[in-house]
Image (cartoon, rainbow, N blue to C red):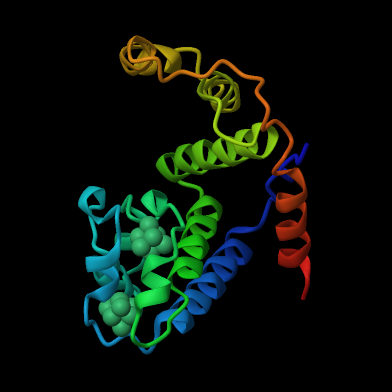
Length: 192
Ligand code: SF4
Ligand code: SF4
């Protein structure tokens, strides 16, 4: 099982340099955006985003990082690659969304930390089970959050999903099947 490394403690100045470096790297990915809006029009999740993908690129290029990091847009990106395939400039937009997730997790405010943990536990569960197993996923998320009241927030949603037969309890034929794929991606990401 992949265990996420504990966060490294940085001085405020070093932390800021890390954030600045991450921002410049993301700006470089979208620098030639011409604001045509094809990415927004193609995105299946745009309806739920508070900033359209096109707006995210523009704000980033203006250096308005906090406006972007406070939005939920990049957390809702499901990495379907449609925008990347359709962008007339050929920009790696899915990679830019993923880089924003990493930047927000490093940025460390409470809201982004919560979202980063949710995303991390979701992906860990998919890696283990070959698909999402909602019960195990939510239990590990609650444990990671160290908040005993949190399950109460999710109880109405859990009951609704249970009533519709949408809660999977674990096990299944797909368990472990995605492990080699995750390991391969991890080794590719670690290459210089
Ligand atoms: S599709 Fe490409 S060029 Fe058009 S707005 Fe999106 S990122 Fe910019
Ligand atoms: S990769 Fe993300 S941002 Fe791009 S179209 Fe898919 S969900 Fe939307």
